[in-house]
Amino acid sequence: MLRLEQKWRSQLPTQSGGSKRTKVSATGAYSSSSNPETPLADEPGVDSPVHPQGSKKSKQKGKGKAQMSEDFSERKLSVVKKLSLMEDIKDVRENELMDREKKREMDMQIINANTSSMSEKGRALHEIACEKIIAKWFT
Image 1 (tube, one colour):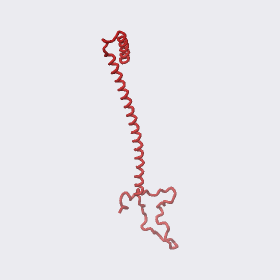
Image 2: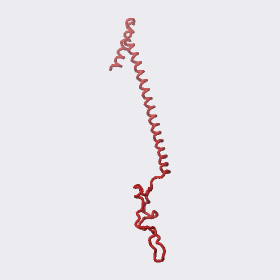
Image 3: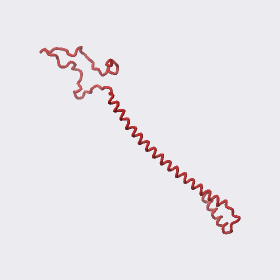
Image 4: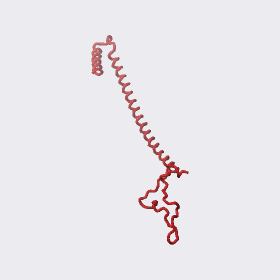
């Protein structure tokens, strides 16, 4: 039986007497209290013995864990939002790099332009443009 197991042994009240009805009073009636040293649960300041959790309580406790999954879904949503923001930032940076590379290619075309067929005025403008480009990229 379970009452003899170690788990339940501490919860069983210790019996000091043999039977429940102990003595007959002077009037011939049995005494009302068979175990007077055992505290009653109705008395203030006395804790009732702790029983193991039943199946209903354990099911309710298991259902309480469903709220944790809601917390997890909220965290997941925040992570997804952060990821989308990071992807947007990445796209903006890639676009900026592509624009910068296009400008560099255009500047290199200006620097490497053939000046032999240009007029004196065109060469002077080309020289000024090359100086500006060099100043922009190398200083």
